[in-house]
Image (tube, rainbow, N blue to C red; front, side, top):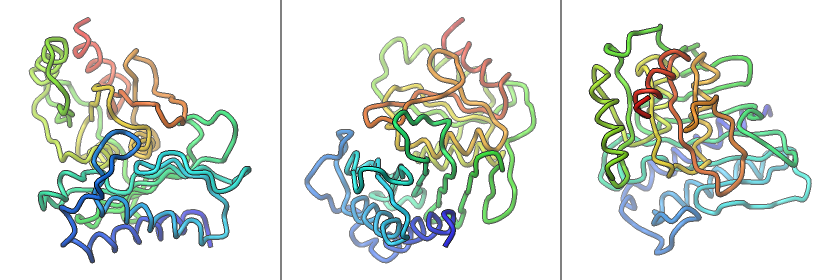
Length: 270
C-alpha cells in the first residue's frame, strides 16, 4: 500500500465516521484540546479513526494532532503525521456543511519544518472534494490537476480573511485597509477549505494574521505552495515554520508573490 493511499484511507475514515454520527455534532467531551479549544466528540473520534488507519498501515508514525498534541508511538518513526481531524468544528456543531479533515506527513528528523512536508491530503467532508499535494508534483482535486488563479489586480481580488479574534485598534485598522482594497471576501470558517480554494483558483488569497492558528493547519499552506502560490509570514518573509507543538501560524497565502506582498503592505500599513 502506498503512503498516499494510506492518507486517503485515513481521511476517508474520518469523513465516514462524521457522516455516520452527525447526531453527536453538538456533543462535547468536557475537555479542552492542547490549544485551549473545547473538544467535540466528533473531533476526538475522527482523530482516532485517522490514527487507527495510519497505525494499521505497517508504516511507523509519530503524531502531532489537534486534540492530543504530540503523540510518540516509537522512538525512531519513519514519518511525523500532522493531523487536523475536523477543521470547522463550529460549523459542524451548527449544521453548516463546511468542514475538512487534513493530514500532512513529513520524513522524521530532529528539526522538521514546513518545507519538509512530503504529502498533504485534505478531505472536504460534505462537498465531495479531496485535495492532494505532493512535494514537487503539484495539487489535485478529485484526481484532476489544479492551480492557483492567474495574476490579478488587488482591486479585483476575492479573498478569504479570518476575523475570529478580538478587534483591537491595530487589528481593526489592518482589517479595514485590506477589506477596502479588495473586491470582496468569502469565508467558510474552515481555513483548510479556504486554503484549498486558494490553491485551486476559486479564491485569490487567504489571510490569517491573528497569531492563533495551530501548526496542525500546515496541510493547507502546503496546498497553496504546491499549486504554484506564494505564502508569507507576519514578517513578510516566505513562510517556513518549525513543526513544533506550540507554533502558531500567521500567513498571507496568495496566487502569487506580488499579490501576497501587496496584501502584506496594506495589512501592515506600509
